[in-house]
Image (cartoon, rainbow, N blue to C red; front, top):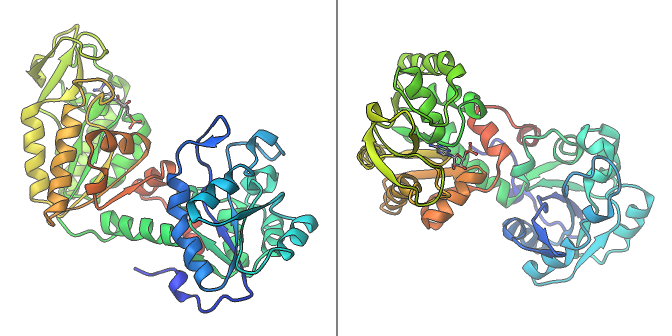
Length: 398
Ligand code: AMP
């Protein structure tokens, strides 16, 4: 697929400064980084650049300061946390542009790593301002983008900068793009998509794009209720967007035309209350009581869905099949995730998953290590599932 350049295309970088766009927007609690996943994710890129002799200047946004200096949103405390992950000292430079930053960067020892201050302290960042990008570019010789999770936004440090300096994909970006290409871009067929979660309205573009691309579309979660209701099923008190019935039917019609089989649950787990261990029963979708709500896909449907995955070579997954945060309505999600994981480990299935709740659900199922790839990007992963071009990725292609 290599339609963009990677670190492998870079030669000796001795004496060169690399501007590396990472995602250092990590959760911080009481001044300490509580989840280092994103730091660990970009570490291999930094190490490879150092091994080639470069000085690495890490650019990132942090939180939403909206173009102003907000001291609580400084990246300063992240520098030592990144240092711990890398096992070396990491310097901090108080700005990502301007004369002072240029002087501080010039004073760095060759072969060192520095975190530059929050790009969003500048209003031009979110405006994809060319002048800001020019200013950043004065600090370095080469641009490497390792922040797939920020690639759906055309910002100065993700898009404009890639058009000013020679641009390359970092290791983490490369891994994401390769996995996504194998998942939907050019997947081994048959390919299935699992789309769950609360609402149809938040994933309309995802569903519309997928029916034209996949062989099997598995719909679960609250959004399945909207489809069932559109087909005339009484869903009682279930979460359901009745006003989207027409939309749901047109998605089903489009699937039909494209030769995509849509799988909706035919048995479901229902309860009268939305709470852990609520009294519940398994029923056929046509037997949901007026005072009941559907909280999970039923065991017979889950088994059939597992059989679908068995004949597929690829699965792309976003969203839980049920209200997985509360027991026992996590069962369908856990069971299908385990099937996907086992098929992946057995070598017959490539499994790609992503999106905030999905990662939590797969962690809950204990299968995160067994999927081919799990993207930690939320918005960028969804926009990719919608079939949209991601500005940060497009800019790397030129
Ligand atoms: P999303 O953020 O759109 O992926 O939605 C995830 C949320 O959907 C989770 O918090 C689930 O609890 C919720 N959810 C999944 N299935 C159902 C359901 N049948 N009824 C209500 N909520 C559900």
